[in-house]
Image (cartoon, rainbow, N blue to C red; front, side, top):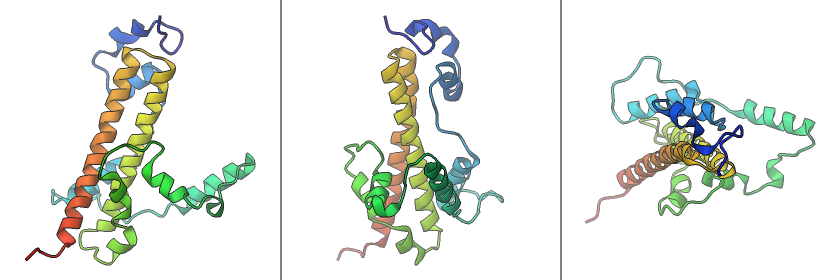
Length: 195
């Protein structure tokens, strides 16, 4: 019989999961989840503003410089004896953009490579550089959350674990579609008209 986290039978949590949000269900199943931050909320607001929806007064902030995060990772890793030098990992940036799991979505190879933030900074009428950055950030976080949920479901098979994984994967797919649509719109807007 399949076991849920904590040694209970797989169906034991079913009655407790009815009506719960994803976050509450993930906690009940002891499934790791990505931290929900104000940054994700700000990202969604920025994307809404760029698409022409009403502007919230607190929504526009300059893109953040994450160098302190990278430095903190290096310091923490150095204390554990692990090196994270970019020179040792020349394709680290590419691996990070594509995620740990390559999915067979035809638009994925063009999502990050077709438009770079440096290219978009030259034509920043709508703040396209940070919109691209935030869309990529949301997609990476959603895919990481789905990967964690999948791993938890693999370790503890059952209907409830699958439900949590499926919800996380649906959010990751939606983030992927949103990024693909934005990049396609941006590319088609920049192309010269056919004669």
